[in-house]
Length: 480
Image 1 (cartoon, rainbow, N blue to C red):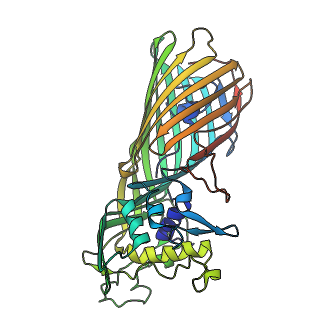
Image 2: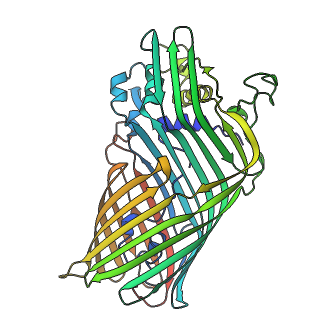
Image 3: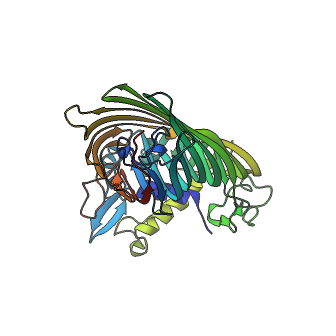
């Protein structure tokens, strides 16, 4: 199976999709809905009203994409319903760069519950879950994109940027949770998660210096990469493919286009913990807090690499036919532009393989949340909520604040409408949740976009996720 990391990075620049690194939990929009069965994924102290059994694969399916800039920043209409990239000369440099942030951040995630059930017993509420989650984060500094767009602006042009990175994981999870009341006002919960590593990709350029002149384009960088995907992963060098001699400075340069993956196998193991608590401060006011994903992953059969300590040359972003007057324009539609951007990116980001079969330990990336809910004294079916969330994951960290109005008109139906401000901009969220005795169906989203171009490209920040689930419930309703 062919897999080119930096072609994926180039596509991510243009298509706002990245490869994998922040965990996707349950819907934060449903945090304050007592009839939502998966609140324990956000705070292990929050117990469902009844016992439940999730339908495999349909009990909780979540797909999400976030960015702090719009997709229309990278794709532009050229007539005839066609699109081109920001590299086109028809796209003004100032127009493009004016849309960028200093750090352009993209995340993508997906998760599916293969098995999940909960029941009362052992003095509290218990949950068991088996799931698979994948997530990815990409950070691109503005100056990197300025270099791609502007190139040379005089006899000698210099660029410097820091913290270009991609981080991706695919992890299987087996989780055991328990929550119980300590006093009539205080409830605590904890969850233990056994983690099975499928794949991990991490590449980071901590510093890159680029000097452009009429004679030569020179690059010097400090960067590292690590890839783990089981024993079946093959990351060949130019020497191994016969493209360079053993004495060549580029002998150990990774040949991304020839990466192979010929067999599946586990590539790591880990352990994680979730901790949470709720406290009824006043009859109508409840406070809550949780810390998720405290733990580590140990990866095996890791292939490591780094940028060379010497300066290397780069020919620039070439042969990307983005204008109708360019030769071979018809053969260089949008997909081919992605391909050529990826090819050039490989040459620009020059990693040399340094180790095979290595080991590596990584943190999980921790999420901290603090919540407060207030039940209206005139009608207990109206609950106002405030949820603050902080993701701690190095350069891929983010922050969110969400305020919600939660309505519970009857015992078998509830819904929420909410508004969030985050590192990715602002967004509206919503949830509709049916939970009569014996059955539960929910549909919701923490983010969605409303404004699109004629080509249906989101204009504002690309923030979207959706979660859907069907579950069977049992037992009498009991809150807390």
